[in-house]
Structures are given as structure tokens and as C-alpha cells.
Length: 124
Image 1 (cartoon, one colour):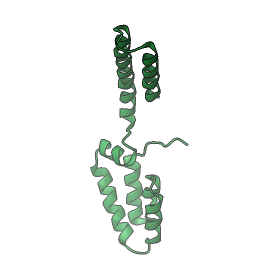
Image 2 (cartoon, rainbow, N blue to C red):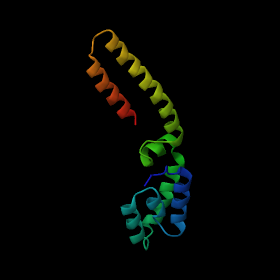
Image 3 (cartoon, rainbow, N blue to C red):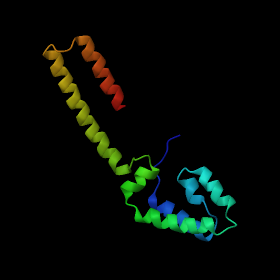
Image 4 (cartoon, helix red, strand yellow):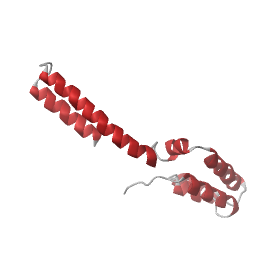
């Protein structure tokens, strides 16, 4: 199953709704089911409602990069496209350097092929 990027806005809306209705929905959305269960179990107290309100403000106060780092494994939608493009350029440059080493006789054909495969496999 592919993990989709979490939206900061949806997390904040769910947290704000948790301050009024069922607490903990934002925790389930963000992939923290244990905390979601804790919030639901404590929903008869005001503690999760206050926590939901504070977390909603916290989500809105964060910029996209910080939110992505905390809840999307550091991967944002924008940066994934730029990382792919820069990764292809870096791979091409590394392969050129490796080929230059082979042509200069500093590495054997066998070493060249091993390193080439490692570089290509690391990019996939």
C-alpha cells in the first residue's frame, strides 16, 4: 500500500473538530493510531480537547517543510519532483566520472561494471 502525503490543512481541520466533537481523528489521519486510541479513551475528560486545539494551532503555525519532515517522512510533494530531477543529473555525472576513471585505466572493466550497477540500483 502506498503511503500518501498528509495535508497540513486536513490535519488542522481534524484537530479543530476534535476540540469540539470526537478527539483523536487527526492522530489516526497522521498515522499515529496509538495516540488516536488514547485520545478517544480520554475523550470524557477535557484533556484531549485542549490538546486537539493546541495541536491544530501548531499544525497551522508550521511551514510545509517542517510539517513534511514531521509527518511525511521528510518527503514533500514539491521536493520529490525536484529530487528526482536532480537525482538523474547527479547519477549522470557520477557515471561520467566513473567512465573517466575506467578510460584512464584507474579501475578495471569489472570494477566499472560493479560500481555502475551500484549507482543505478541506489537511484531506484
